[in-house]
Image (tube, rainbow, N blue to C red; front, side):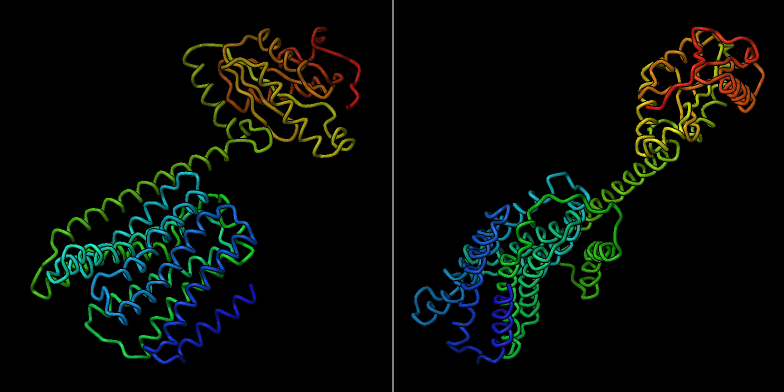
Length: 489
């Protein structure tokens, strides 16, 4: 890697000192491209990336594009096939399908999930730039009568290739959150090619003939692109570049929001510019582009609203769910119990509330550790849930205390249900419970207080038993009591 960086630095900096239009300059450019392709091949053989096909395609594209310089010079020197288009254009254009195919493979490998947000963002940016390319590059090239049908096809192929490459590059940058050194070098190489082509497009629109210095600087940008492709391939991070990554954050970053805003305003800006000039020549293209951008913006807004709804629902669920056991927490209980009391107040159905406390939970934690205590709580919650009816409602009240709401259950039915739960307690542990049947008038706090008083009666009577709120001072039912204290296991 260090050797390649040294060669790249010398190649890029030294090129500026080479006379413009000289044979040395030609050899320098072609050698840089071929060296970069060879370095990519070496990187593939040495590091064995997960997706070698993508890198072979990059090597072919770089070698083909650099060969175009040599082919053009040979055609010019020999006078064979001079003109536009020529075989040199075929070599130059080979970069676009090869790089696009390689990027497509990388994108599919890195983001196997459907990342619609990144796709919409990439399409929005590409649509805006595509509209610019149509007005200033594609349409003028397609309407030039002096180059013939093949010339029109080749002329259009250059900007179309840039737009496709831009779309794939933006999609790669936006997809997923993992960005290692090889990823950044690859993106920098693509940006170099796009920047170089964009600069030439601007120069052609200005009808400006760049001088030797400007010409060398522009050519040097493409050399940097070649060598950055190679740097990405020879860096050790190329091994993990093709690994699947998680989706990016749902929110829009400020730079991305700015880029999307600029892309969305390209259509109106073009229309204003043509109106100011007094000649609107691309009304249909601008109208279609604005319509497409509007629909893309609406789609993105819809995605953001959907993501916000999902996140809001998730936050709401977290607010009323106990993180450890997955049961409703005390906040959820304090909402559900009053609601249920209002319902049974109208229907006249019975309702029982039970409070459960795992016996000697602190001793269990001290003996086996907090992880074992957490495991006991989770397994107990799951085991008790299996003993309940569909309509019953189990929640974690706090610590080792749980509450159960038993709609349409008499005192006897409530005792049977809670006793089944007691016998299902895992890890050899037991619990004490207090049950209160709603009297038809009391509030949620009052029935909970009665059940809690019954619970303390059960604990004071020796634990591992169930007490009814109305009978907690009487002798306990033998079927649901054990006087002996259990040993924590």
